[in-house]
Length: 131
Image (cartoon, rainbow, N blue to C red; front, top):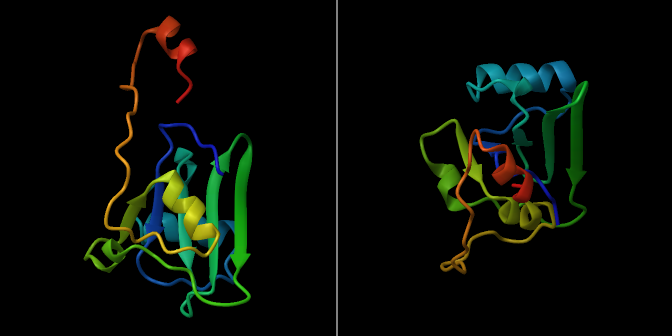
């Protein structure tokens, strides 16, 4: 399981990218293709043309972190909504976990979950809820 703060978004690029790119190349892809800021702290995911490799890039304190995974068998199963006209698609942390394990994230029904409301400006409230 991957634990990310509630405020962190996970974006998947719709179009395949050359995964020979590293920190600068992927951060430029985030800016130009996904129209996002790579220093935002959000997670950006790219896959290769054959669908057997993915790279995740995110900014953490003081530098970029890249996670690169290659499946030995099969392909990564991306949600059907990736076929939309958008350059990027947002996914949840449970979808990211399933994706990294090579499992299909397409299910017709998900269990409904409660998420606490985002609280801004209230220091005591934010200390009791880690999102």
